[in-house]
Each structure stands twice: as C-alpha cells, then as structure tokens.
Amino acid sequence: MMRALLSAELLMGVVILLHPASGFPFILTQLSTRKSSCKPVPSSMTLCHGVGYSEMRLPNLLGHDTMKEVLQQAGSWVPLLTKQCHSDTKKFLCSLFAPVCLSDLEEAIHPCRSLCEEVRDGCTPVMAAFGFPWPEMFNCSQFPEGNELCVPPAGMEDKMPVSKEEFPCSACHSPADTEKEFLQDFCSRDFAMKVTLRSVSSVEGGAMVVPEARSRTVYKAKGWTEEELKRTVLWLTDGDSCVCPELQEPGATVLVMGHRADERLVISWVRKWQKSEKEMKKFSRTVRKLQC
Image (tube, rainbow, N blue to C red; front, top):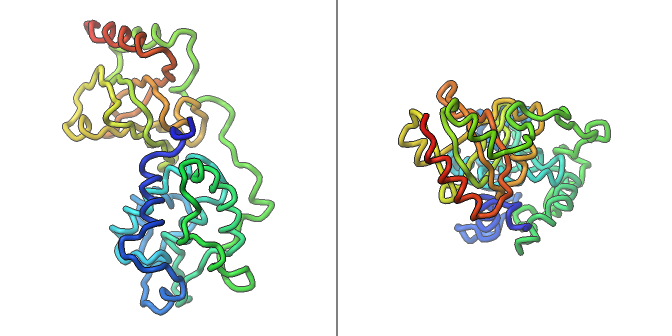
C-alpha cells in the first residue's frame, strides 16, 4: 500500500542522489570556490513555485552547472511535496536546488542544520518505506548550526498549519452514484477518462494532474492534439484554494471528465473508482456504447 505513496519520479531522484553519475563525493566547501551568478528562478521549476524569492545561484549547492540539469533533478522531488511530510520541505529543497542569490552577497546562503534535521526527521519514514536512506548529499552535519547566515526553519508563528478551506473543489463533490452521474454528464464534456494518478502538484494557484500513461483509458477526447493523446496533463484550476480528496493519493484510480479552456484540459468532474476490475470492464463497455 505504501508503494502507491511515492511516485517513480521521486524514486529516480533518490537513486540519482545516492549514486551520482560523476562518482565524486558531494562537499559544500568545494562549491564555495566556484564562480557563481544570479539567475531568475524559472517559472517551469515547479519545485520552487512561491518560494519567496526570484533569483537563484548557479551553480547551485548540489553542483548543478546548467539550468537544464537543475530542472531535471529538481523535478524528481516534486512528488515529495504532495506527501506533506514536513511544512518546510520546499524551503529546504529549494535552498539547495535554487539557493537564494543576493546581489550584495558573494557567498551562497546554505540551509541551517536545524532546517535540514527537521525535514529529514519528517520525510525519512516516507523514503525508508522504499528502502532508501536519507541521501548523503543531504547530510545535515555539513550545514551551519545557525550562528552564521543560513536559511532557518519556520518560526513558531509560521508553523501554524495553513490549511485549505474546508470545502470541496467544485469538481470534487461526492456523489450518491458515481457511475450514474458519469454516464449522465458524459456527452456534455470535452473529455472523459479513467486514469491512475502519477503525480499532483501545485502550479500557479491550481493543481497539475499527471496520469500514468499505461493505465489510462480514454473514453472521449474531443479536439485533442497528438501530444495530449501521447502525454496527458490535466488541470484543476482552483486546486490550491479548496480540497479534493480524490486527487490526494498518487496511485489511486479515478474517473475524470472536463473541458478545454485556454489550451488546457481542465477537470470539471472527478470521482475515485473503488469497484472491482470486472465492474470496471463492464462500465467501460457501457460508456463506449454511448451515442452523443
């Protein structure tokens, strides 16, 4: 059951960090002698959206020299944010992948040791469930103890949980009969499908939902491009201001319907599928017989 909680991207990221291709140990002091420059934090860097600053140092504190490498490696850790294993996970990861860059300060600002330790203690159990220890590259002993400039954990006043409003997103109301509701609304939607959730991440106030391609069953795809058929990305536009339990568990199977808006496939209806495979096959046959 726990294996559904961590996506393949995160596992790949852990493997890369535990076994870096370059083969040399990660030592922060080595990076301090390298010339760095300030670069805008890319809008495509999902891991650090809303991190609170706009410029980062390159190379970063993990030794990534190019923005392409940063984006590739940082993207592997986005799924960990959805686990909410610690409220400072984003702050800690971004302090390494996209360290804040201040024009009047030549040296990089490291995360404080206490920040690392709090995130490590909160997130290690999630990673340990898959046999992966806390990566040596994130060894907390290498970070400053706090008697010098560093990125601290949130203060007590900042640790009050900032929860979403306790009302469901408009697409996520629980129905009395999922199957009946799906069939009734099928013809009025631009797309309808059954998917297994690969990842769900916050983007610009909404939620970006990426399904597992191999487990996807498309019932309706009005006006889809070849790219959308090949690699489907769905959006829940109000995903950061409401709750949607159906999308909170990567690996879960859901039925979704929606419409196209501003070149995006926007979810307007989603329900978790909990019936047997036999019932799913029967349901699929019924949907395919619909004449709209």
